[in-house]
Length: 424
Ligand code: ASP
Ligand code: MG
Image (cartoon, rainbow, N blue to C red; front, side, top):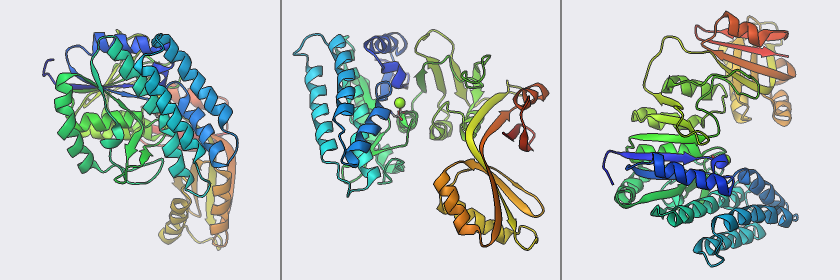
């Protein structure tokens, strides 16, 4: 293999959702992986993570998880039978084993343990299984590869479901073992997963496989990373809401981070920082059209780019005013911020006026009630729910007219580049 740097590919759930999808992924590895040293990070197949969440939830509540478990198993077995018709293919045994361990993990899920810890132990099987399938399938296609357990490399604390990385240790382990391995063959590993010092499994947060790939890319000083998705590249809006989306051919790390921050579900928000720190370009490409240009996210600058539309639904607008009609002081704001942080209410927008302070936040009934309980003796609190927050980056008159059209605007805030509007 050549030595012109390492590439990291991330295959998301949709890119490995069926036997045909696996064949397509293998073709991409063959034609586009080229002569490079290539590390593949794979998500759970299709919507497996959602299904595992349900099975786990039932198991935790000591209810019958069997039907859900069987559904997950049947789905994988169908793909397995198509990819590995011979009953004695080692892939079949490997996957059967993993299902057995998953079953016993579910069986032993105790309602006395922490829910989030139990979640990580069970839900992680989606990636363990999909990566085993990919490993064996590529092997059968003549693409020699090593299956690597990412829990032995992505080292984290035990913040279950949102594990925090031990960067120095992770980097040391990856640097020690993976470059020599990559010089000899492809490496297949799991997204989303980490491991604690005690050998327990953690996860990095939903959709965290992008972040996993970026961690590997960073630690390996990769030449580039590519996310294979079911869209053309990085789009300026969600096609579900905007029929005429455009795909950015090239966009800066900064723009992308900001889009993720405002809630665009393009790339996991933590993905960009490690790549930007090492100037590793990130490509977003379509596995349905691998020859397409896709998007290159890198350290670049453009004066004018197409406006990006980001929609957050199910928002609430909460306003606080001081009971004695004095101004909202820094001290009052401190009290409000502390309560928001304690209740993990995520603020998407804030605005201060003479006697009131307003925030737009994701709506959680229970957290909102607790916020009101906590603060109602100091503030008069009003709120509206069922709202939508539009963020338009790089806005112009036409793009604003488009999102405001026919809507009641409850709050609007503009900076030079970004306009946010809360509507009913
Ligand atoms: N399988 C996990 C999820 O669906 C992680 C990922 O796909 O990025 O959230
Ligand atoms: Mg997924």
